[in-house]
Amino acid sequence: MAPNGHGPLTGIRVVELGNFIAAPTAGRILAEFGADVIKIERPKTGDELRNWRLHGGDVSLLFRTMARNKRSMTLDLRSAQGQGVARKLISGADIVLENFRPGTLEKWGLGPAEIRRANPGAVLVRISGFGQTGPYRERPGFGGVAEAFGGVRHLTGYPGMPPVRTGVSLADSVAGLYAVIGALMGLLRRRSGEPGETVDVALYEAIYSLMESSVPDFDAFGVTREATGATIPGVVPSSTYRCADGKYVVVGGNNNAIYARLMDLIDRPDLAGDPALQTNVGRVERGAEIDDAIGSWTARLDSPRVLELLAGASVPSGPIYDVPDIVADPHFAARGMHERHPVRIEGDETREVLFPGIVPKLTEEPGGTRWLGPELGQHTDEVLAELGLSPTETAELRAEGVI
Image 1 (cartoon, helix red, strand yellow):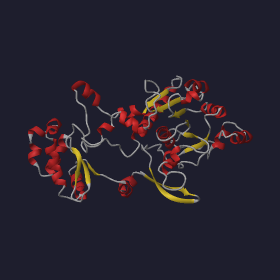
Image 2: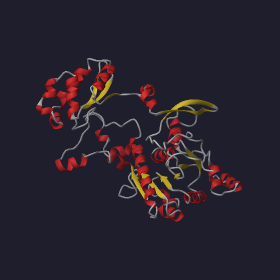
Image 3: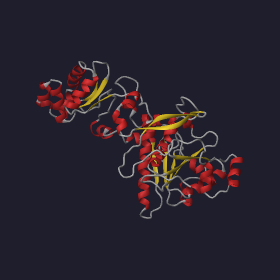
Image 4: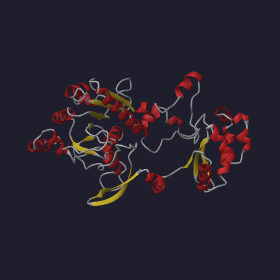
């Protein structure tokens, strides 16, 4: 029997056909809130994510995180038999997730038309680099390409320096969030008896959606946003400041009332009371002067004292944490943002390891981690039995390399 989920999505079955980060992110979130997510992986090799950032053993902790609460089923989607099993599986699914290059599912006989014939009400969520339509639809596009094409890479780093990327898979993760939103809207649409929705998520559009008013500002005023280092353009003060102990803190004092409190705290009544600086428009014109004043103040104090004083003045601020800082901070623990689970590291060695908690938090039906990312094909026989295949039929599929 399918595992009993717990959460608002209990009873929802998801077939995940994706690899790497984007579709698996969507599947992870759905699984965390109770959905039965069946992850289809290639026989023998599985999702390549199993070997990404592999610091020991044969399965990365990245995969253990991204595939938690999912059931792993091996299936060769390139074979006619595998495609037949996939269609049978899809016939009982509520959501189908995929992130192959456009046209791949169609080539395998698993495109939207075939899915609709197998299951008219299924919500099909498709994630790709450039979307299912348009002149670039067939281009391969990983997250880094999407971050560049969507505009955010141009805004990262410092003026005059080569563009840099964030240290995480930003485009894939944001696209995964949009995939979940689209999937849930598709489920809502089914309540009216309408046929299944198709959700088209492009990685570059997920990034483009984060670009705020960049295009309207360019079109209306000819303004092209550029990289600004630690600050954000048009918002003052909001930047990163070095403290006496060499550590950096982030301070956001751009609200008018907060700005006045911040200037009082750093003993700059001249800046606090200057009529020209009472709104953000005026402060932007003198941003360097204001940042210098704040930086001079933080440079005289160690970061813990700076943060203590800023908190006392109700000025939004925070340290710039690395991972050890995150692990040590009590607030993460108090909010359940750390979970400790036993995980097989190598061979038979099992270790208690800290994993990230569940987001968002629900009061009545919170999500949870029922198990970490499974072994390759761990649930294949179980799922095939649910589809009605006999042990003999399953053995035949295995002998032919279909599973």
